Length: 305
Image (tube, rainbow, N blue to C red; front, side, top):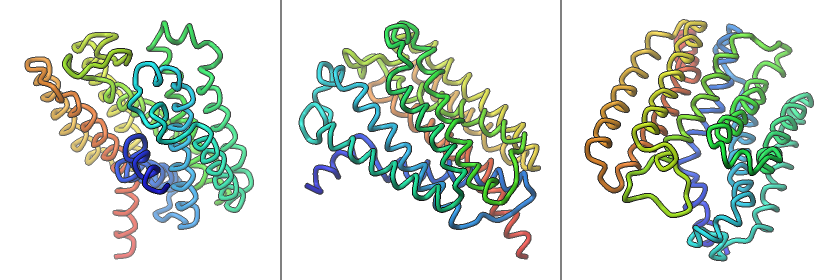
């Protein structure tokens, strides 16, 4: 019993891969909010609730995808856990509901008003699962499919930052808009990056961006999204006086991404598309840590000294 769930997480929601990214995301959202308020420490309970809720929310995103893509998976990807019978959709639905109960209890214990923002995120997730009731139109317009689904990132960001400012009796800081923009664009970087493959790695029935747009355009879109994310991150970092480290770190990553793009276009060897996904993950981790958690830790250490 336990073994099949271990296999499922390894294939569809690898905890040790997603966990650090989700931790960086939740802590940095709270840290950036705290820095804007002039604070250099986080409330441990609030940080725990933010991380726990974020982790379970991304799990719910995966579960929602399992339901939404069940028909296509059965036809085109029978090797996945659900169509091959490793786990059942009903079991995943129960896990999603149990996760929702934990999220709600944590939110209510921290600040009852957080439940409102949690419900807003759940509502957007539910609409995404139904593809906003325009499935056929979105399927014909993949760019709008991606742009509409990525709204979930800033929607949940509001909840994550609220774990900091709401219990403290503060209000929404307008500077948080930069963090929301970074989160939205970062989602696009990851989404495009994980769906860029070399011709030898493409699968029938899988609509990757390298198939829809062609490798050159897909890679150009990926680099453009990274550039826009870096610009928003720089603007956000200026508000907390941390723009120079952010600029240096992101410039180095952009150079790495550019070199890898040139390499794939000149020599599209099998498996090379995985490097784009790797860079997207490293980019996201560095982006969030440098914009929130890292400056908060440095300020806290400076204050302690």
